[in-house]
Length: 290
Image (spheres, one colour):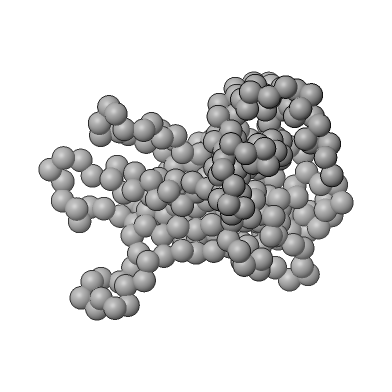
């Protein structure tokens, strides 16, 4: 069984414009966003830019459904918690602004959802696997009710098997543990009773050998691009640790924390040594410290 969480696999399974894949995506959206999905349409993952200097954005999955509502579905395996809120806000704003063209009225704007599925913990409450974030308008009775840009966060490491699970917990559990043999029987039971999960697993299992080789190549290319993100995450986490300890960023202790954080984020030793301008031997010694 392939790892559905991996970025390239996730995009392929939920972004392919075929009926089985669309059933899988429909089930995923309905489970986490709690909205009825009709007339599902897979859109290009590229977001248009209004000015040349604007940052280019590529979503994992962009889709439209119902009477024009849009959704961005993101699978995040790399721990980017330091910039996650800003990234969510940026993607949400892009989804809204891309709906109308010059001269069109704002009344054409439909609700846009941003769904982030994380393979790391972000929100402190350990019980909150699935969090729906929206802006309340209860104090403004003259404004129409309903949020136009709700955010949904799913944290897979918090998923635990229970005899009775709701649909969002089942999806989170299967996504997290789909490759682990010890959960095979439990996942089979879930798959048989949930249509969306059944098709999600079917689409994953039906990837041909040629497609697997193609996805592997794309994954290797994406890994190289993700390295820069991992370094930035490690730098930001190092700054946070340094501030907490009242140390300067260039101190020895902070350097060690940066090395450990980068290694934790799956950067290899040679790469860490090069970026931090340290010897491979020094990096290895730091990692061997108790």
